[in-house]
Amino acid sequence: MKLLNASGCLDALTAPEIANRLDAFVTKTITPLPRDGNPPVRIAEVEHGMLNAIGLANPGRERFLAQTLPRLRGALDVPIWVSVGGFSARDYAETCAALEDVEAIELNLSCPNVDEAPESAAEIVSACRAATTLPLYAKLSAAVADVAAVALAVQSAGADGLSLINTVRGMALDERTLKPVLARGSGGLSGPALKPIALHAIHACYRATGSPIVGMGGVWSGRDVVELVAAGASHVALGTVLFADPDAPTRVRAELVEECSRLAVAGVDDVFARAHEGAGIPA
Amino acid sequence: MRRRELLSVLACERVGRYSLVRVERGGIDPGIPGQFFMLEAPGRLLPRPMSLCRAPEGELWFLVDEIGPGTRAICAARELHVFGPLGNGFDLTVERPLLVGGGIGIAPLPYVREFLPDTPAILGFRDETFVDAAALLPGAEVVVEPTLVTELLDPSLDVLACGPEPMLDAVRSLAPTAQLAWEAPMACGYGACYGCAVEIDGELKRLCVEGPVLRDAA
Image (cartoon, rainbow over all chains, first blue to last red; front, side):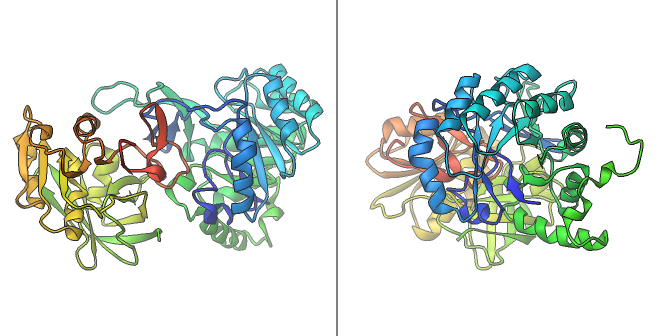
């Protein structure tokens, strides 16, 4: 089990000491052209989670490759995963073709501006598969009728693994004005509220595909890591918890040791897919 | 060097409409005036950014406006996670400093006076019910709306200002080289969340790493 960060939840250039406590660093999503992102207010704390509407702010592919990536390589002792976004299969494929010497590529197929129909996700993966030999992880949204069907479609199109899950769209209203807090109105819900949704998506997609899965969604403790791995995640990413607790990578690992001891297993990999053991558990 | 510690709240005292939260210092470096700390109350998911108000021996003081559940939880807490110091503070190597504060934006100015004693100050408040907080800056000139701080401001001085955006914009138009401490909601305070981006002169800046104090008209 590798411990990663969820894309967009850590900047290794402003906090290399935190990124280096992970097993790999995942970049913020890179799009072909630079994006400022959405106007403020972009974040809000809500019951059991937070909303964000950052809007894929990033320097764009050209500047990322020329400036950001070399600086990341200089700052990091751990492998780099690059999160790739776009608005067409060609956008994604061109960025994939330009990447080399990174551990993996995560395809962000679940940003609000991308059609999430399985065919569309599969088309993007297929174009990227043709453009690179690097491992491709497809990051899917759980806010679809059948996430396992999308997982099967992207697996058939050549994805090596899955990243599950992205945020789920939500809204918060101001205490006094009763208007949306976020300037954009809605945003992606993350944090502890997501864990049951993530557990289900991981369970369903592992059962359907058997693909390696990076599990994420509301991981706050070592116990949460154990549960995602038991559902079928090979690796686990920390997201919103990094905002509240920059020491989370170290703390979660320590809790993981305690939790494994409590469960009488040698390591967390010993509970991998345990939720699937026994007959008759429906996905 | 920034660090995060769980520290005891020594007291929470009313200062007019605001609350002064006094926290034990622990091993936290109080930093430079204008820098900030993320304060996380038990039971809340995310911390809140607060600039340091004063740093008496062994303590850290934060001036908090209880505007929602997060800030109310900070004022009710017996212990807080404190992470900092964060961001860029004021450049104190100025010859003729003048402090300008608006509303809860007066928060970092008493700490500036610990470095630059007797610096003159102009404070503006929405109405009389907020004025008690001016006691944190003895001798300050105080105005209440509709009078604005800019009506008393001598733009030839080296202005260090913190307050609501319209006040900072007005100060900047009079004194283009003023050092301005801006405010934005933040989830992390250290560059991870991109939540605190504000548009200044057509460019989005992450206030937590590029600010909160921006100089020379940004």
